[in-house]
Amino acid sequence: MYKYFLAFFLVLGFGQYDYNLEDINSSSDYYGQDIGTSYFSNKVTIHYFGHFN
Amino acid sequence: MFSDWQDQGLPVQLIGVGKDSHNSSLGNWTNNNDTPVCADSSPFSSWSDWGASQRDVFVLDHQGNVVLQQSTNSGIPNNLESVVMDLVDDISMDCDPGMACAEVLTCCDGLLYPTSCCAENCDEPIDDSYNMCSESECEDGEFDNSNPCNPMECFDGQWFEIIVDCQEQMGVPCDGGVYVDPPEGVCCSSCVQYGDSNNDGSLNVLDVVIIVNIILFENYYDEVSDVNTDGVLNVLDVVQIVSSILN
Image (cartoon, rainbow over the protein chains, first blue to last red):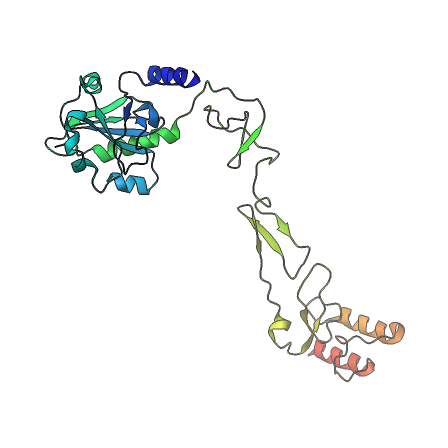
């Protein structure tokens, strides 16, 4: 329950520019975790949107 | 560029956001890199929420605010690195004046702050008159002559040894005189001319008086007064010093 409250307030804090998507890169440190802007709070984040062409 | 930032330990994170309808080509993104990559699912609400188009890059500050949004169809933005570095600098300068802190004098990085939060609540350091936080060993200009042969002086809060070179120890000859032990608080002996019994640097009647007094009343051997260096204090020394004075 606490986790949901925390996620709720984090979303409020980060507003529109956030998401919560699973990391599907098996080489990544965050593989399998749901990540987004708020996951990396207090960091500068760079988001690249692209198709896997 | 990003790998350099990672190597430097900067608080910067790159994330790729694709669409799960293209997962078959995921390897093109993930081969030989450990950047997190996410796949948005239909109806791709993350893309629409951000207003993102193919090949868009977004840079967000540490509080989640968009600072840069630009298409990379023509390449990576020229100012990307400077934008990111400025945002990283903002992180270290950020403070929260509303932070709850205990009202207790606290030392941080050698400075005294009024609360336990130090500078994190935007407080300025306060006067540390009692040197509660001072990491210095001494006061600038302070002098320690407790050992006159190894005096110490304070510069920038640190003690520094002053090298004392004594002529006698360095082998400098005392021509026409003899080395006399230094008084208390002085390290080096001094070269005193034979006959200069009062060690004032000159030969005059005062020295004659002293020599005569030693011979007649004190009856001890004074090497400085032994003007003819024969190992005995007598009238011959008086005659010689008078001759030196008159000549």
